[in-house]
Image 1 (cartoon, rainbow, N blue to C red):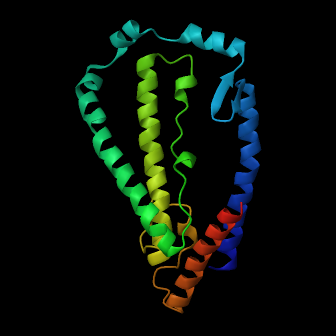
Image 2: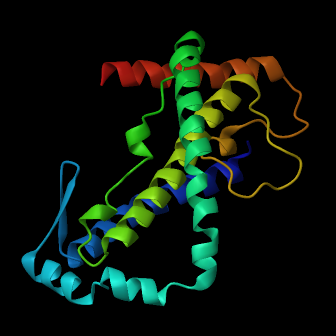
Image 3: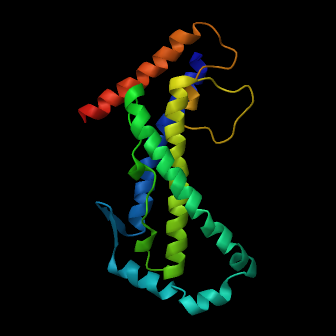
Length: 201
């Protein structure tokens, strides 16, 4: 990786660090606090939320017909999602210790907290929980796969890929064969270092 690319990546990381406090300030303006895994709102915010909540009967009258038609398909995907969750979790549980890779925490990716929003009715909450689970599961699986890719084949693609994982930027350039196996070993060592740091903390 040349110096200019490294500088740009460092600038991106600096901007991300700068962004986090700004997001926290915005969250403070929305008058909620995190207490462990629980989200609590100020009373005034809760009251304002309840006033805009759409009742279940009224909600049903606003649903588009195509949403009713596709609901069985959407919720039918719960079965393969849960099966995928089970498979990917068993995979990392059995294989990551052998590869000396730190396991990915599901709780870092699958966050279920929309049930605390008083402006959502029970059906909206169920929809939100389902979407949170599905999106979080895919992020969790992506990180497991990214760590596996870093171990076995950390090589970028010749074509631009949208939505690459966070580890991709450190992978070897396409066509860069110089000291391939040595560089792969370095990336494997980085995974082992992450495991040691996790064990220390």
